Amino acid sequence: MSTVKLTDEQQRFFHENGFLEVPQISNPDELARMRRAYDRIFSQKAGREEGNEFDLAGTDEEDKEAALPQILQPGKYAEELRDTQAEANARAIAQQLLCPDGSEEVRGGPAHAIFKPAHHGAATPWHQDEAYSPHPENDSRNVSIWMPLQEATLENGCMQFIPGSHLQEILPHRSINNDPRIHGLEVTPEAGVDFSTAVACPLQAGGVTIHPGRTLHYTGANHSAIPRRALIFMFSLSSLPRNDNRRFPWNETKQTARLERAAKQ
Ligand code: NI
Image: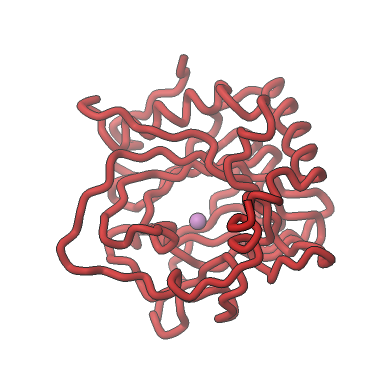
């Protein structure tokens, strides 16, 4: 059962600016349980063989420490991360933002986890999530709901957004450092984005930011002495076909170790 309901003002803010903060969707007991499970699956590198655990910001060789470890579908590897109060609230928020009349139910859950180790977790460069879509021929309709499991600050890598950037198309992206062996994407320098209007969103543990697939966002490196754990829920409506043969060439040239591992399964 959800315990959070957005006000009209919050919904208006989201649709105008392309992001929203909600101060709390979980509770201290649940957050402590989730933190333990989160640390466990990252220390196990859960999901590595099937390509679900990898380095988002590096070349991901077996003998190299990851700059930015990520686990896709973390709920698969830890039941403490499934069917939580946080998930029920995230779902209710997504429903209110994507389809408030309830004519279509949102689908989704915990989609991924991004871990920034203390002192050296890398930055996640500016990008739009829809640039990762394997189906550029469709417009995706979804929101990502980003929840830190400890305080998130500018020092440890809280979320930052460009207000209003959700109203534009997908900008040109490339693999981080223009290296197709790296999973992560970044908007290209040639896209000419003005980052001076960026808004940082520090949060307490269990608070969330919510953004749709076209909002430009970024998190800085972790310069703090504590790990920065983020769990990201994603909820979607069915995607809508486009008729302009849109392509995302930056995904067509990927050659990551993660995809090689997945192909061997
Ligand atoms: Ni993102």
